[in-house]
Length: 588
Image 1 (cartoon, rainbow, N blue to C red):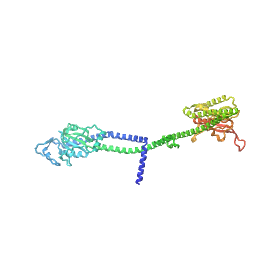
Image 2 (image 1 turned 30 degrees about the vertical axis):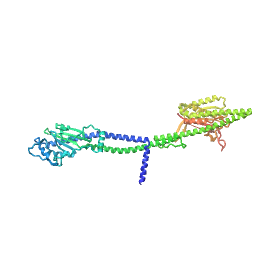
Image 3 (image 1 turned 90 degrees about the horizontal axis):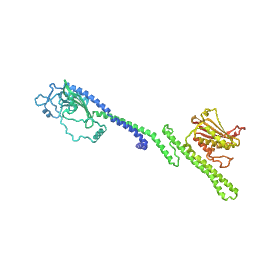
Image 4 (image 1 turned 45 degrees about the vertical axis):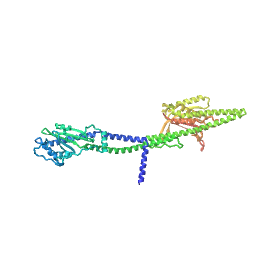
């Protein structure tokens, strides 16, 4: 059990470390947690709650001071405006022993407030509020301190403890106090105990002895907030003394600390949730991107095995689109590599045949004795040189085609105008040819296309090259007196998911022998030629291959079929009337 738990823990840590190896994952986590930390620091640094708590405490102390001062003035003042206490007897008291008033005429101190009457009132009113109450007479001398009252409200005498030489506290306390001072720096005055010194050293007590109320907020040496307020004790508008109420050292700071700790707890829970959500987001973004990058790098290195790009196309977000684009790009790259390899092999094969024939003729020419043989060999050499020239020209055109189509911008071109120009030039240049070329443009179906023009996006020169190749090819297979018919009409092409694409169809019909049933696709292969009536090497076999390449670059299709007539005998195949090459181009 322990091994399984440890193994799971190690697996979890390995997975976590692998995720954190991605800089994108680290950025997502840091940015999310950074915003949360900034929010926490803002909450902790803002003093709105602290200031509101201090204001509420000042108002509470002011109300308490007024009540206690009124109670003391009503019940604890001396009718003769003074009471007598013998200071010699007060000094002779043992620790914990109370002092009883006497009527002896020994030297004494006179007070304007009776401490014996003040004690019970002070205990009952100040103790439940957890505040410190001190009463000063009208001369500023301390009479009573709630910290020095017994349960029976007697005034006690205690020996002062020895003064500590070092009260800096532990290292942790000093460090925490220093940290609080740095983070929550305060410009409040420092609170210091004056012991038995005259109470007039406190500005608020001095102000209260003058008949007014005053509150002051201070901080002690530990950085704790002390709120104090002084109110006059007066009877018949005569000030008999002053009451000083102050909060305990940690009274306000405990409340603030508890609120801050509550915020910290909320932050910790939020940080854990944010961390897990960041890991989840990173797992759905950074991990797929890392896999895609690694796969693309493997493709770039070109290992002997073809690497597949991970398939995330089931995701309907940018990662899925990126995966699909990379897969399509990689497939196109592999297809291009295959095409280049195949093209290079075909070129080598096609160039090898005339070179072999040329070498054989050149080697035989010096040993030929008869003039007829020499002339025949020279004719072979001339034919092979022309064939090589034609092959190199067509190969050069085919190799430049992809780059030219990719670099050049497509424009709106009118198919009817291009066909009219190509056919007119073909008829003019071959005026003595027994084969005539005609153009018909369909009307009726999609008749509005002719009004708007048979416009497509494309390269007019390359489309003219395709039409010229098809017309020359049809003319070369037609007998004398026949016609090559070119037909243009608007047509729809079935697309994926039952949709139809609008476009235009161009057909080129001839009256030749037709195409063998097994060669409908082969005629578009490079260097394929099947012309029994013509001499060997008269054609390079690249014309239809280049035409398909151009049409597919325009988003269209080209295919070949035979035109057939009605069958006159049952069981016999219908007669072939000629070949038909069809081109479909999408409408602009």
